[in-house]
Length: 347
Image (cartoon, rainbow, N blue to C red; front, side, top):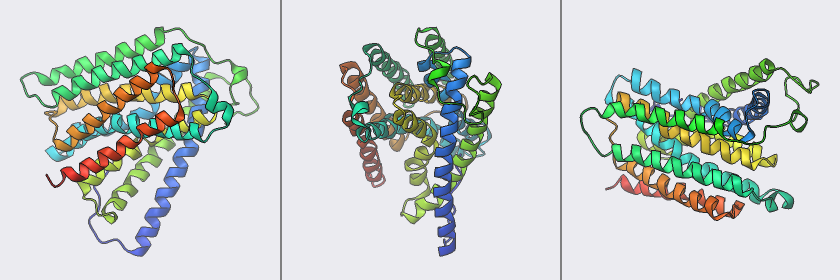
């Protein structure tokens, strides 16, 4: 969902059009996510999938699919090493944004929520589950990180290990026990507001339709960021690494905001965690299959900040006191990354 930034001078009219498209795409993504989360909850209910697995698998797979496609297209159809390296950057940038900005925004939403929601505590079983997910992510991500600094024959075959790791994660999530949402507790399906028990195919139609709009709007959003970056004095490469991952992870972040506002922070946190697992496995596997999978300094900084953020999240969930303030502080780590990356330019 990214394209090469234009280097031609930008006139006032072009700037206005870009800003309008930028804001319009963001609004379209948010509204589409409203339809998506509503539809995916009904899909989970109709398929008898637990509420947590609905967030970690169904919702996460849908919203993380476009980013995986970006990596696939860059690696398979890239005509130069630079283009193929875009796929490697996407594989590292996604987890970075999710582990910092996405969790941070959930924390801010909780801070601004009604007092009753702020006082709501996640059950111990959910906290343990969230901490285990962070632990598994950290192990898998660090495995990919280590491979980013090593070159040896047959390295690309290790991509199969990451695909198997995600398959194991999906099996584990589906095998876990948990509550299945009751139809009476769900908001009516938006395209069938008078039907209290919509068929699976109606829910699937709404979910896939919303996902298609999210994909197209995200493509427009990234395109406008590619224009805005040079206005801010950022080089195309720096703009792509700093800004593009924020755009490509916007659907997951919007989903989390919507679910948190609805008092379903367990679903919000599960969706982010599930998306992180996809980003740590599928794009990494694609990158290993089609590129040397070697990191430069900027990617190393991104990976290091991600590790720090996930370790902090693991401690928060394991400690048992999950608050909006603690989660919001995690978002500041992205500013640490941005500041460090700007410094790295002059090394």
